Length: 374
Image (cartoon, rainbow, N blue to C red; front, side):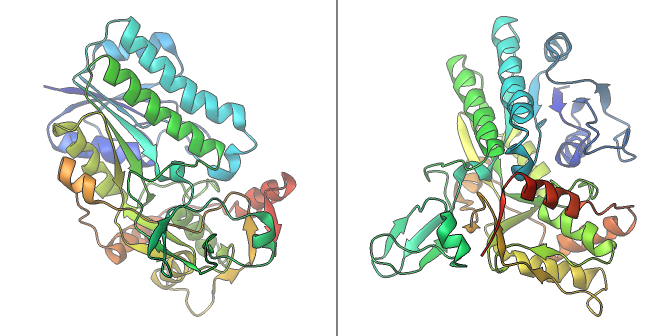
């Protein structure tokens, strides 16, 4: 039986991957350090049919031992949080970049024979998404909006050639990447290190560039996690979701169970030496996400999203996935419809205690000069 080593397999995404693999008959070993920012001890959703090792992926001796028994490596472990990464720089580089480099160093120098490596990458490495100038009918890849534009409340991108407002279009894997945070850089490092080393040593490898993942098991107490979890925590505590800019910025939301399937498909496919977008391809506005969650939590009579009209340094305006290559290479398409997935998140969220720490995290960003006002 194929043994799959899943790093970070007790976490939000990793645990769903574990369930998917166990259900399909794989022998699964998990290594996870149960980081306090995400976990309060061992979670109650752990899969009884997987083996769990409580340790850190930075531990060379431990990872050597685990890799020697593995047929496939599924590397999900990483520090997550765009804003936090900008002032906990060393931590993010150590946990994401250095730990991945150490794992690859073990594989190469300890003669580890693996059938395949899957690594979790991120859409954040793109920076801004792709756009089209409707006046000239040409694709544009604009840089980050500068401080003056943001302070003026001019949220949309303007064509540098003709001055027309740019139209967001699906972002493909061929878009030049302009990582705009330490987190994004470290995720790009994880992807490029893995593909480069595995290519050199003829180990099949696939990097999955995740878009915005939501669903059950996402920590509601962690204010640096995804927007759906942050909004859920606010709403459960009868606080309005705080939305930066004007709320019309868009993201690509994909349910975690679809992401778990994508990991299995990538592992079982012949795909190798490739990075794939894992998203839905259907952009949603941030205000729309907040309104949907308020409605599903049954609080539409008491709560409304709060549009801050301020901004965070480094935030992008629009980015959603072109999913055609993932469909071609690994046969992956999403199955969970957006509203169905949000209902699943809310059903789970109703059963969770959630401490709303958004104000604390927001104050940290302000203290570090990472939040501005128009």
